[in-house]
Image (cartoon, rainbow, N blue to C red; front, side, top):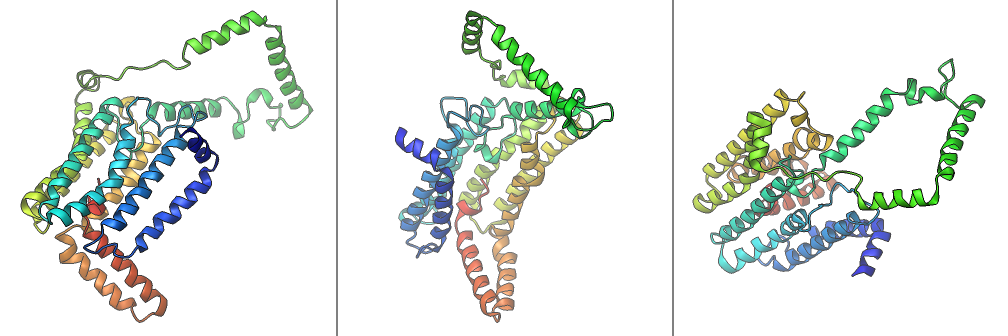
Length: 368
């Protein structure tokens, strides 16, 4: 196993390219969206799990001491969520073939319930921070804050163009002259002289202290009561919105299991939960944006405002009954319009075929 880890870490670019190629080819497997889909989905799930494990190996390399994707805890909750997402389509297809269309929703509910428990555990262990990519990425906000503070410190001390003022001459030019080089060399000489002048035993004691005492203090994860006491009403609202985001897929699949996929009630309820949850989080982060407790990091801004969660709203166009009533007609119209064009028409037909086939799978359109 260690030999395989070393090989993956040494050839991570080659492994990533190979995984991307094989992942794209799986969409061209025969019987991908037919009744006997277990074989192709099993291949896809196995490749997805291998990709997930390889990424985990690369991100937990010894050189990456503070990777933002790696969990400090002993149990890898994020890795379990990713592996479960790789397996859930295979579970859906197998349940549908062996137990029927109606009974498969019970298996989907169990899968979503497991993901809810894992995400709630991640939410608690992270100190009730915003989930990134549904919990697949660890929200290490302290690391990004430290980097931002270092950048601000460097940019505030120097003069123009970020060059330290001590290395500037009286005309404000960059230090690439004799005076700047002399100051830089003198500075390096002083550092080297101080290091050499220190006794060997003193350096040994300092090294032992650095090993025994961690450089960064270990912060305890606050309890729910502590979090609500410190953050007050904004913290309670923020936590409510995040819990609604976590519970929404489970609520949706339970309603589909009871009322059916063609009913508007699950679709509208899911949309309402998403609207309320996102609205609450946006309200808190906007109204208290100047507060240190609710200041979004760059990763959280990408998650909430720019990329992932906003893109998930497009999946409502692909879910029944909206897809059957509206989206399918638009796709058929586009196909008829572009069909006379030789190459474009063929590509459009293939893309629409894949979209229609993927729409039949809950796990592709669940947004969870």
